[in-house]
Amino acid sequence: GEDVEQSLFLSVREGDSSVINCTYTDSSSTYLYWYKQEPGAGLQLLTYIFSNMDMKQDQRLTVLLNKKDKHLSLRIADTQTGDSAIYFCAEGMDSSYKLIFGSGTRLLVRP
Amino acid sequence: EAGVAQSPRYKIIEKRQSVAFWCNPISGHATLYWYQQILGQGPKLLIQFQNNGVVDDSQLPKDRFSAERLKGVDSTLKIQPAKLEDSAVYLCASRSNTDGYTFGSGTRLTVV
Image (cartoon, rainbow over all chains, first blue to last red; front, top):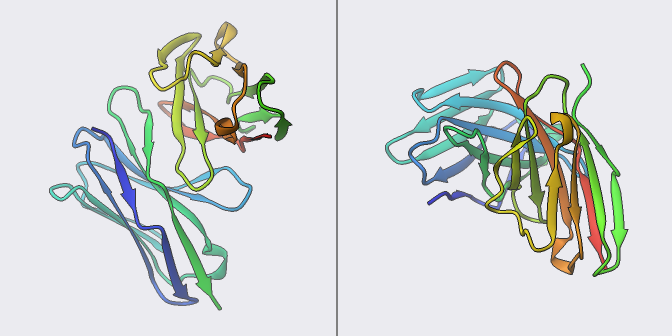
C-alpha cells in the first residue's frame, strides 16, 4: 500500500540545524520530494532525490535516503525564522508521477 | 514564465450547493492533476489528466465530483452537491518531463 508518515511538530532555535524525518512504504517510488508550505500559500518544491541516491545537498538543505529502511530525512542547516512552515515529504509513483504526501511536519523556529 | 493559475482563490457555499473551480496549467504541460488538501493533512490526488484524457480518477468521489479538461489545456473541477467534509484547499498542478511539477496557489473552499 501507499503510505507516508511524518512527525507532526518540530521546534528549534534560530541558528540550529533542523532534521525532519519521513517514512514511506512503497518501494517502487522513483523520486522522493520535500515541499514547503507557508500559511495560505501553495506548495513550494524545496528539493528532491532519485530513489537510487543516498544523499543530496543543496545549499543549506541535505537530504538523506535510506532505501532499505524506507526512511527519508531533510536537514536544514542554520535554520532561520523564515524557515518556519509546514514541510511535506512526498513519494513520486513510477508510471503516473502522482505524488503521495505525508501529513506534514510543522517547523517552528524560535528567535 | 507564468505559473499554474487557479480561480477563485476563496469560495464559501452552503451544503448541497454546487461549486466549480478552474485551473490553467503552464503552457505545454500535458499532465494536469487535482489534489484535495483537508486542513491538517497532506494533499491527496483526486484526478490526473494526460492531455484531455483521464489517467487516474480512482480517488474521485464520482457521485458528487466531476472534472474535465477540454482541449487538453484548462480544467474545471465541480462539486455537486457539496458536503461539509468537502471543505478543503483544492490544488491544481501541471507537469512536464522537462519542468517537473508546478502547483497553483489553490482554491480554499468552505462549506457551511
